[in-house]
Image (cartoon, rainbow, N blue to C red; front, top):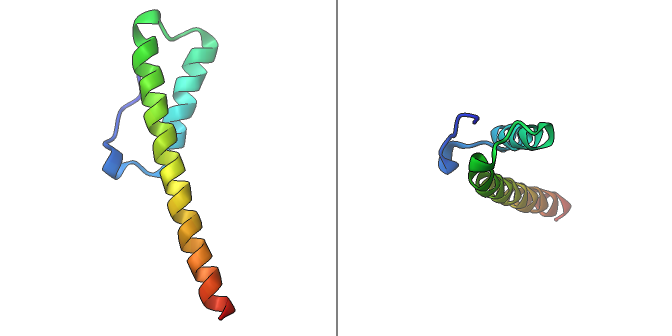
Length: 70
């Protein structure tokens, strides 16, 4: 399995890359049944990290756009 990085230090790009790795292993049949639950839980965590990062970025961009329109 890919190297795990703590949530606080995981960038959006790293989260997406790790998620892609999990998906690739699932699609290829490389992921054994023993790793399936762990991998799905990790994928869920990574998706949550990505969503949070996207939400934060959108909020920041909206603020910048609103500040320039005033």
